[in-house]
Length: 167
Image (cartoon, rainbow, N blue to C red; front, side, top):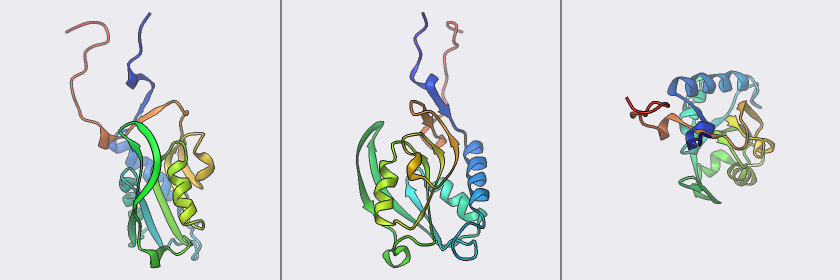
């Protein structure tokens, strides 16, 4: 019987794929903002939401971009979500017209915390797992709860031994 390696239940996302999927997210959001279809600002949930938020902001020609820093993981271990840095309070208000972007919603705890602060914001992620879906207004791809997504900013190219033995 073959033992599976940790990455074999993973979903590997390349830079090209995250770019395509983030553009698809922008297209899905285009024209759905509250100001005649426009959004007031994009807020990226750091760190994973920064690349998708930048792409969405570019595609939708949104010039006001800010971040909210939330820590909910310690390496791969989930912890209590806590805000480390908030976006501009005057801009945010209750979240009306604000597009909050993250790479992934997993358990939903991070988005639940941010939504409690900005209840009228629109929450968009590139990828979603079933447990977190209720916290997301718009997403592109759903993956199973037990899938680990490997993002390109977490990876490095390196040698991998062939499946059947050595070279």
